[in-house]
Image (cartoon, rainbow, N blue to C red):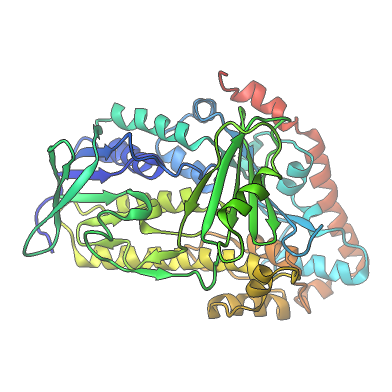
Length: 495
């Protein structure tokens, strides 16, 4: 392993991943290391990761980012969850919202008390007991004391990269325009020592962050790290993205609308709407997909639709020798639950905690890769859940998803919830119990039983408890301003 001190860090590629890394490293370590980011104007970024999850608030707080300035700069809107339409069956929809549903007991989650209420015929829909879900449906939003409303953002990812670039450069990071044409390696260790640009310029470094997108210029093309392909579980391999004019006020949630061979996203920003179709090319051609998407958008298209090809899966090592891969170069789980930016953020925070200032150590590499694999595989299982647990058999695509073998880890979660109503979150997992419960119920799994603690309460006590939670949620929701009103006064972007 490299025993030399890490003094020069080179980030290969810009976009969201590159500039998130540059901003964090420059803000925290900029006084002790030299940071250079190489990006080329002629290589475009994917730039469609425009929906986020609440963990981004943590990243922004750690970097001291002012939310109002940030939201205005990225022309952002607030996000309380994701609506899934036509996933369980055509015409059915549900929302996976952020936050907590009801109130838990230390022995059992709220779903057990709700289940007892359902058996008694007195419980409302599970979502009626969740503030974030009700606020989303009623198009309302506000900041509440003690983070009483859990939220994330919809943002323009190109404006986000620009915002972060300003921050990174302010703290000493240097951007170099250029296209990498050659990667230099140490003959003995195989460590990357520098890159050569098309201009002939050499950029040397002690440590490299690969943000080169699907190509994986350093992690794969140079170090031949290998890739675990998950297409047998997540068969979608293509996406089409297009932006449209906004024709109505933005709603505070992302929409995910299932079609015959994939699904469509709608992400409302202050100035436009992001749209796309994720699909399986085995069942749908690019031309058919473009036609499907363009027939299901609202508002005038602002750009020509563009097709992206991908392979779901994960790099066999996220850190190899003196290269860490972030973003698309580290692997890709399709954007169904808006986890792309989260995984970039987690990779950055993990790297910052393990930054190899005294030289690269194998123990750091092994720990980094082990933590990353565990986290990514948990997210993978959560995404597969949406496809596999469905009543749809109306197309070859959905029949394949419904009948496919799934990972044992996911099968265990499904069996546990179906048989007992129980869900457990492992430490460091992204999705909490409430997320799994909302999606499993939404996709049609009803537990066969509930915890005996729910039977301790009398029928009257159960009724009063459920009614109290539902009334509080309804009262708080009604007191909130509309989403648009709140944006107008809190973070309106200059148009």
